Image 1 (cartoon, rainbow, N blue to C red):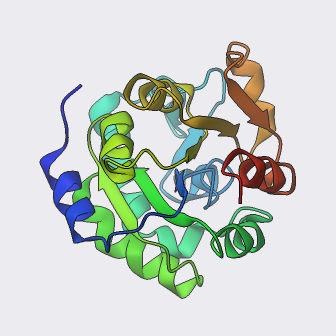
Image 2: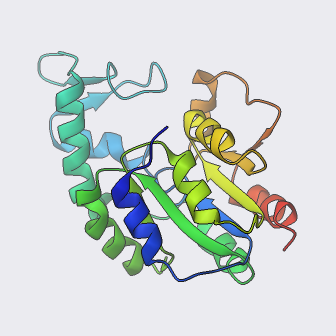
Length: 217
């Protein structure tokens, strides 16, 4: 897995920190995505059918019923991220959990999205009072987490809603504490069971004490 050079540049801008590291995905972990996205689609003349845990193949043009292809999905996602401040709110319990965990851990937000949307997301997070460093990546998350950790081997926890991202972290940081958190738990039905070394949590109230314990806060 190769690094994203722009992500590496963003990491180099961060102040050195040797506290335990908590890396968080943004969409459906810190900000709502699955709930507002269908409303956004409806406003654009599309509808989402959650028949599997992916967007492509599940978005149809409302008028014709035509399933849209990957390029159109990507374009709609781009439009959504441009307008995210109108649609995305904080997931339940996240603000409180992060405020507590952030007293003794370094919290970094790591979002898989085109770098061009970083400034819009940064402004939205700041408006919501989530002033934690934000990294964007267009490649695998694991190498970014390894780079964030640094050479000292400090404890690391990573929270994501996508199993593939958690596996990427495992491949790059063998001893990372991995947590699978989904803003909408009904989507778990589309996923295979969580591997034994990944801790599935239903919400931030359940996640916070487990993360604190893993990082020995």
